Image (cartoon, rainbow, N blue to C red; front, side, top):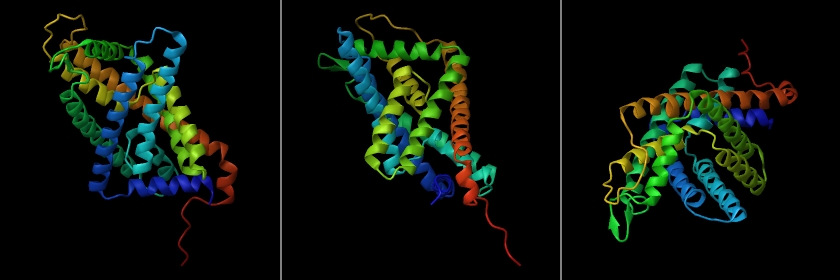
Amino acid sequence: MNKPIIIEEISKAKLTQPIIKQIYASILAGILIGIAYTATYLVIVNTGANNETISMLYSWLGSAIFGIGLLSCFMLGANLFTGNCVGFVCCLHKKIKWKWLFINLFITFFGNYIGSIIVAILIFLLPVFSGSDGEWFKINQVTINFINLISKKINMPFWQVLIGGIFCNILVIGSLIAWIIFQNKIASIIIILLLIGLFTLTGYQHIVANMFSTTLAWLLTTLPNPDHLEFVKWTTSVYGKLFYSCFLFTTIGNFIGGIFSLWIYLAINVHSSKKTKIDPPSTSK
């Protein structure tokens, strides 16, 4: 079958799922990304490697771990907002009305957020970020590093967030296309890990990762700080920046990046599309 048609049919199947399945699949995706983000952070940021070469190896390892989270979403049929932007092709070829794409993206967005909140609360309850020396629910150095990292993300200029969101979803959609069209799944996995590792290493903006990380960081700021460790305090203005930057412009950037990368893919493969008609055939009288 023609490659653009394969992508279209899989996208159509996702967009036409019963709403309850869309919700479940979206929540699952939020949970998987939250788990992968936590492992990625602990490997990349908190290893404390003094050697530059070893630090770079840790960075690549952590990036690959986040790629495994995305790969898990593909394997388990979970719905990510970033990946579901590929449904654009169904609307472009008039297989589905535009309103169903936006309804699906709306459901997926909030389902991802619910999943992110669930996993953020559960990880908060573990002693990974909120415990040290056998005591739980107090700030430690891992907590401080994490809060400061997310605070820097929140205070980024909106245009940097927008560009980072665009680049992020170009790579995510490239990974999704690789997973769909490559018959050799080992090759698909290698390409996906490399592509996702690229956006993780460069700090591009992924809306679901931002949902999880900001929720966890907010929970961690509520912990007592008996050792008076230094970290960036979250004031009321921070929450406005959080919505404006981490959510609004990341979402817009991810959507633009998803549409752009898919449009480029279709443009490259337009010769194949002409050979095999994609638009639905007219009904003969």
